[in-house]
Image 1 (cartoon, rainbow, N blue to C red):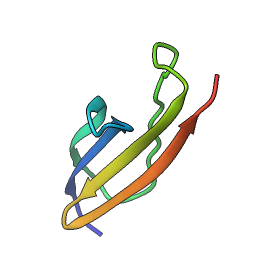
Image 2 (image 1 turned 180 degrees about the vertical axis):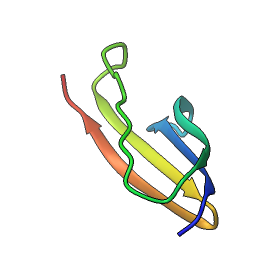
Image 3 (image 1 turned 45 degrees about the horizontal axis):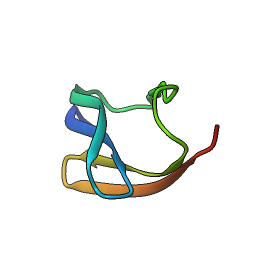
Length: 64
């Protein structure tokens, strides 16, 4: 575990960047991020996390 550049972004169903939640160097450990989605429509979104060479994308259903 070491410091690494982390990027956390939210995309809409069409692949457009909706919100950048985190970008910068983070220390190893557990972290949390809150996305205030009050101004966004209900629907399917994707959350992409890039941490060093690790990349993960998850589907997110926003229901209001």
